[in-house]
Length: 483
View 1 (cartoon, one colour):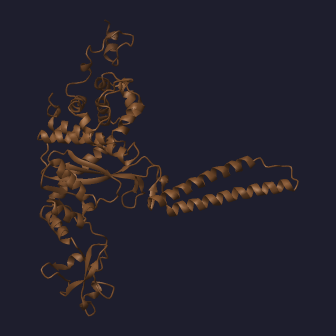
View 2: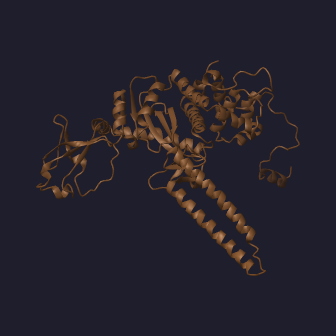
View 3: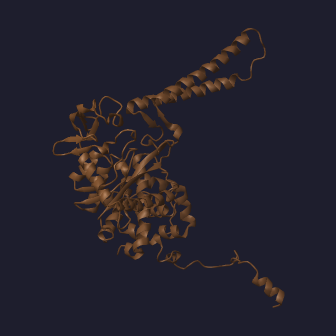
């Protein structure tokens, strides 16, 4: 070999195999994936499930008709898809043909996208049960302690446009605007007819366009009228048309989008999501007690410590949790106040005498109840001549409202003051899973419509996260159920 040829060989790029070169794939399909691959964990886990007990349809083949796909194979495909950010039924159909892991998992079966989509549509509750079965498997294996959990919620976009959010006022405004446009085109047509009767031969060429516009606007008016009827029937102030189970949600002053509120409870020690749910309530305050009770049932414990943020500081819910032996640690969410006056925290409550001592040293006694807000009013007649009144209130008398369950709030806040690191633990435990799930789900957007289908989709996302996290923490060997 000459010097010039040797130099050319050394500086050449990597070259692939000739496409016409005859080669053999691995002689066994099992050689397509590595022994430690996640797809093997998915296959083993689904194989260990009793699909009929979980509620999956068509677990027994029919005696007649064309053979169908086994629900276990379809569940395997969906779990693998959510693990690899492939959620669309059309994308899953293509993956069955061109992805080696999907070929291995499905044993070279390739269902069409309608069959794939129908499986998720027909088995939402069973899919949720399958996700819960993985947590039960981890509990049986000693991977979850249940010593302490963290609770949080996040907004997930629904399959609906913000333009479909409408209330009674907006619908009435849209109807009035539509009627105004119809009247405009009718006036134009009347002007054209008058010009013809006066003997003008230059008939405008836009008559048909105006007629078509009136027809389209009439259809729009009818559609708006139907929406007004639906709004009255459902007794709702605002609806997301096309996705009525969703609600307008957002953070602070950001635009409100059609969303669902996904709740998750994460075990502090293992980092696994032990319980989850999807609600269409924008506020988290009413979800603390039901989520905590459901978590106790999952973990099979009689006591539970729950870490949460200020959005869950509902006094009535916290008192209910204490009654059920659930200890909540969360900061109290306080509303904005005028900083020119004394804050309510500067008024000391005496439980023995059921009175409040104000900053001036006067005693405030109960003077009535606020039933709707579940609070007691405290007042004193000494405000009139008090020297600190300019710093206390601009009115004739200062009123302090104390919630019926304020003592439960105070005990919860005392836990935070005693151990401020609890909030750091909460943030580090429960925020990370939401970030991972939203990245795996296209930025946090569901693909299905209706609360039942959305819960199934959330269960698949949670199951995918739990499998990834469990394998990373405990290794694939402990996640492969024995035969």
